[in-house]
Length: 308
Length: 238
Image (tube, rainbow over all chains, first blue to last red; front, side, top):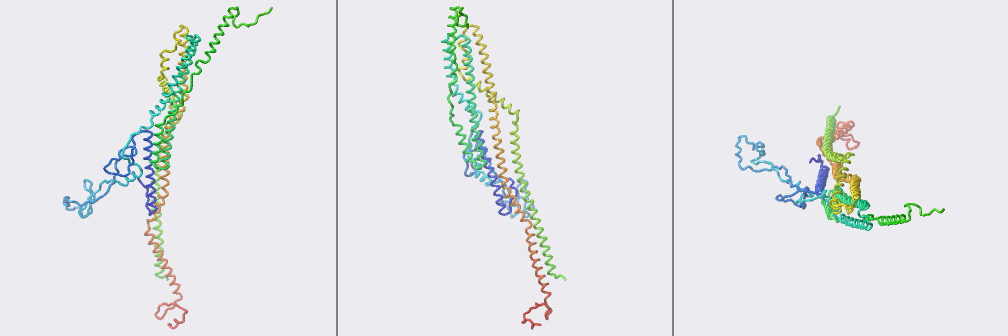
């Protein structure tokens, strides 16, 4: 990368060092971001930070990709085994070298040839080691996908639905019993009450679904806040290990957290409400009606008699 | 008449000043060039980072606006309704009721008709409630989904801003170094100029001194100028 000049004695050295430190800082943050992304979004991520480099071993980058050792072009000199093999009378050995057709640079001093070859760029490797960008293995991270949150929601639904069903069964039995006692089991009143109970049951089922979604949404918010914290920490400190460690802890805590679901409160208390009074009212109505019939009074007429 | 020493000194001074000026000029030009190069490199870095930020901003703006919000809200409504349906399907009692409604079904025909009508009304009410609930919750769902969508964008913009600030923080060091490096140019000319100026100045001083002394000298016997001194011991020489 272009370092934008520099030079100029101690000032130049300081500037070069400052630029290098800044580039390393940015590399550390990028590496940390990749790992944080993998923790929260899922995917392959490098694991086991490498402390040293062995050219024969395999290494991986922060995003789980295979590490390809960086190389740089370097010149080297070797003594040519057979000078005469070139055979040209105007051989270049005495005249400062040339480049052969195969691209090898042939030097011009005393039978030595200068060649270029790609060699391992240890500076770049060391920089990656120092910045925590090199790993000895990989691991697969599941990440917090929609599936994870759906399971959160489903966990609440699974928790609350049986309770709701039990309450509904009890309420339904109580209603049937109350209607039966009043002899209204096969009446429009029974249909009306049953419909109301059904409606209430459906509304409660919807509440359970909504509550499940609320738990899932809260989990989404919390996990996103954890991710924000980890990224902020990374940006402030440029220390990917600390930030990733914090992110991992929070992610594990979120994944393993046992949700504290509130038990379902009684929801069908009103299923039979009013049926007692209704029955009493009906009985009273019947008695009144019978009494009126016996005494020849019309229903609704006053109880007083006319005195002439 | 002007003495050769004075003339040479004046020439040396002039040449020295010119050389110094030339050297200084070269140094200033080199410093300016170096500083511009450093500034350009930094500008390019900043431009690249700014481009990344604008790219993220474009992503963020893509889902903004009423249309995007309404689309997300509609998705949320469908999602919530699907949730309700999933709970209904999971509920044994709900399924049981739908398959075999209520004990009142065995009543007289008139009652049964009334019950069917009530059932239909109930179903419609439940459907309407589900729709209303889903719509009620959809704005919150839409806002959350939007916030979660924007979160990585926000993080990327912040990271890019962080890089831009860090990079800009190095610039003063680089500018200073570039200036210092530029000042090395023309050093030889300046040194030569300085030497010439110093020599010219010395020559001028010496020439001036000689000239001043020459005015009060008297030729001696050999026709050489000798200092006129008040010391009486020298009087015998004449």
